[in-house]
Image 1 (spheres, rainbow, N blue to C red):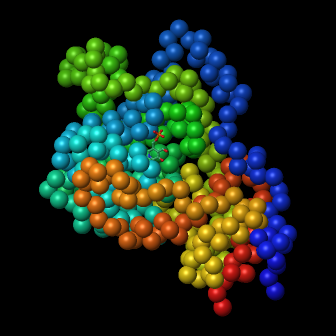
Image 2: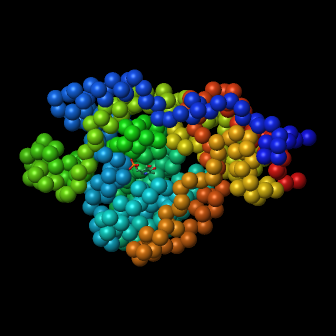
Image 3: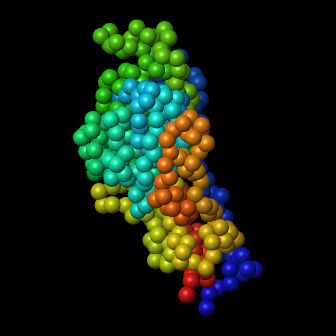
Length: 396
Ligand SMILES: Cc1ncc(COP(=O)(O)O)c(C=O)c1O
């Protein structure tokens, strides 16, 4: 006998307060002190250089260049790789717009590839199918913090002489075969926007092992710093103009990000522990699928997504979500609209094909809180809410 659902007038499964449990970003005395310290520095721009040193050591890259946001870092990465008019760049459609829109700004053509429905990350097999003589780069996204299959992607890229940008905006601290994501492709890009795993409130970082890419990225948007390049650098002479963008990070954002970097691993650990605890319960329920992390990856959770096999239930996904919300669960459907369905690409005459695998899987996604500060009692209540609803709505 299943319990009466809250949506039908029954008692709510989730009664604990969730404000503290899901509060993000964590900003406190340490960040306030750092901001105050930097405001009093004789040259506050120095703070960005210290953040770069610390971040590149953490990621394991030779070079790091701080940006005012992750979008700027991706824009600069494309410039560094020399992406220009008519160049094709393969990217997933299931991502935030900043992964692919900067391609258009250089006259490039985003070519959308399917995801693997088991991971929601770009499918290396589909990348291969979309390579043409015009393909210059691939942008992969470690979606929600789960690393992409980097060995396969790098192997394809090498075979066809294509460059790889890792959009690691969701994946600070995630690892693939012992390497931090962002350090595996030709260039890695991170965001420190306020919802991310480490924040500057705004901010971004470009990392690379290639000195040429580093200098070229600097030439795009960091005029004053070009003076500090070695005299043999072809970019030094542009220090009075750069190439027309102003992309340096705000020093106070750098101050906040430095504090956040110190706590990144411990905070990721707490999120992972909470999400993995709840997912272990949810995956025992019929019609619910969670994302599995292969043994050779260490994932993080920018977002906490699961898959609802709608066909197994008597109600639609909308009704399912409504019932969960009535139980007190802070859940929603997927929040990213698919890029290949957006009007801008059509209006700019980008050839667009349907992506049936991506479209199908996106529709099944349910988004849950990441529980950065939650305790077990709240997680148990979430598990109870899901159990009530799946039991009631499961088809016979
Ligand atoms: C996948 C992805 N790429 C890039 C970005 C851009 O970062 P920012 O917001 O710092 O410009 C974001 C930010 O939300 C993102 O989610």
